[in-house]
Image (tube, rainbow, N blue to C red; front, side):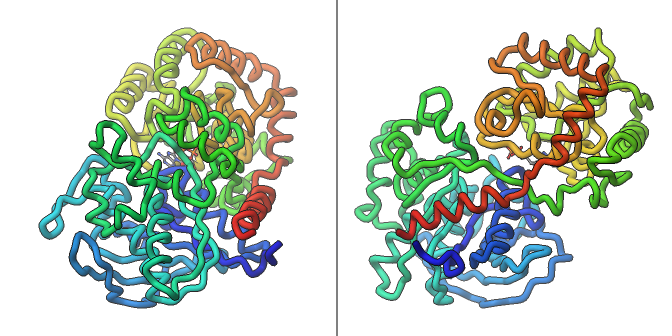
Length: 490
Ligand code: ADP
């Protein structure tokens, strides 16, 4: 076994909280390296230097004008350095005009740079190649590159390519963590030429030519076939994606890699998500004084969101990307029905598909004293909702891990979840309210059960107290990652 203190890991990803976060990917990449560093690994991370990285993080230039060949031409980028707050973890920020804009992802937007239309697949292909170029240019000695999701799924291919091309290139193993298989980075075929990849060196790529009549490339699939190991963010999801229902058309390739596929449940940054220290919330509290603490938070939030100020009314929180994955198709009709008959309030924070946004806003217009909806991304408000709510809704159609339920439990809010993926692995009947099948009927029943539970404060308080005392930190999972890294280096 390799001495763990010697392992040098480079995380590469599109997000890392608090510098750049859209969802759970950012939480994980911003917190796991800190946990690894605490237990003695040499962990650093590299991410694009987005225009939206807050200016308060002081950066220093490491090297400018690193040359990269992209799209058959030479281009340049620079590397800056900062630290993950409250840690020794170095963050390298890759500065290039592709990432200067304020938004993290372009989504469906495409922008013309020089002669080429650039979308996210070009941006992250560029980033993936640049990561490997940085290692070469700065002569970094790294044992493992830990890639995350489709954005950096091409890195293992570049590592293979560079290992052959450059004699001094270090012997690096690669791990790809799948945070969400639904997003795969579907690319035009000429992305290979754009990246300057030799087709004959990339078997995973060649095979892909025969997919979908040879029309597209799938970057996630390339990562699955080419990384030394793959893992997902919960053991249940690691099993689920081997089947048709959750495999997103990649199950055949995942099955092929079963021996190298595993699942490790995510932790949360328990320093950041701590109701006893959280400066975003109205009143801090812990597992002993949560009744008074949560009551104040509820009252203030009700006031600020123009809801009826009622201490005794249960509040349901929903903080999420508003996409089908998150269970909106069953949740919206159930809310429509229950808001007429039952006494509760709903606070929603999220953005996503315009239809879901509109439907949520329509609920607010219809029940302004019972429903408050904020469309957008707002970390402070998110924390206030976790602190003020009695229940947290996560009726997901699928959920690789989910962090909302963990944050909710830490803030003494009972999660209502569907038993899928990481929700199944982290919430049970003792810690939350769990339903099995993705149906309106089961969701309605479980929400009604929550309303009944609310009238039994003794039981509710036992659950809250127990949840708040649990360890949701990275401690345990970080040791599982160390074991996985050791397997890679064997
Ligand atoms: P996913 O990664 O699929 O979006 P997770 O539950 O794993 O879902 O993680 C979501 C993370 O993003 C949580 O920390 C959640 O609080 C946060 N989040 C989601 N939507 C918003 C929003 N609109 N504003 C602030 N934070 C949000």
